[in-house]
Image 1 (cartoon, helix red, strand yellow):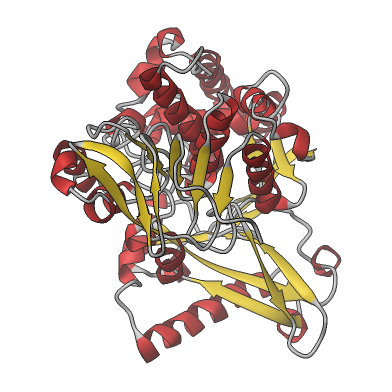
Image 2 (cartoon, rainbow, N blue to C red):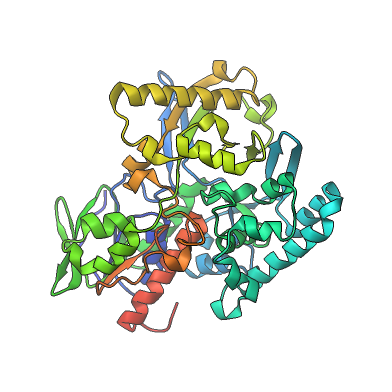
Length: 482
């Protein structure tokens, strides 16, 4: 138990997802007293763990909600420098992978190297007729990566890629459906198939893994979130759990604080890590103040949600057959057909990730209730376990715990519309700078997280919080820029 927090702060952050935690840690480092209010019992948002005990025993399974790997943490990379500056890096241990993941389809089975040069060499060996195109594509990706830290430094193609799909860019270099799928395998980390996916945003994510290093945080997402919390508290801030914000308070057109069910907290700055639609439509006490922001927020398409099953089993899964840390299983090479299946809720026709998640359209789930919802959830769980059992024979007899999540689950825990886990869809018309801006039209109100600049995902969320904090400090004229 921690003492009751003060009622007056320099800044208040709504939500302890990685965007909110990153913003709070950045502000606290600059000397501001920061309060973070989180509705859940754990800090971290999608970067947290949950425990499940095996009935009648003392055995407890510790499930990582979302983190399976993250990038850009090699020395000299941007995220490495940010976490070091915030006092987070010193509190975590990193494991670097040589293999990023395994990709398997009807006509391919590859262990994909994390190192870009090794990856390029492997593809050139497997697809010799496309070797020159592969080389040209990797060179273009390296150029984008070299200049992505500064918009002024971006090469010409990078600016053009913002308005183009990843498939358009790919087909300028290679035209083989297997190669297209393999090179696009990480599309599910952004929730859009290559035909719809913003090429520049995908390139940023791809480069973060294959040029910035592929890592796992020892202890998982919760260890990363806890390190942020420790950094915030060390600098005089506070993170309060089970404290859902019910309203953002304003006076004379500017932010004055927030309200929870039990108290009011006052600050001239509020950073919302909640979704943009929730922030402008339900939390802001006078929604008309953010009319222009809300027009943008309501006009953008939502990302998909996910289906997932967390399975605790007796025995060593690797020894029993699942030897890959992260396995992408593709039923075919037509990703457009998978997208249509996703829109219809036909999860059996979609690719899946063993050890990760399956995409689905949240709107097909969130309106289900009662027996209909439970029955559909049972069908989903059975399908996912059957898929895993192909890799681990006899799995069903070994299961001790199984927890299944649906888009309905995502909406309940995150409060995101339709359970969208990536915020807005990452398309050429709804990426990064086209989303609601971190500095809103309401003085003192800022956004952080997947719903604003620059992008979704662990790195995007942490980057958004840092960026929002920089804007706050500029507006408050607090010292030099972080």
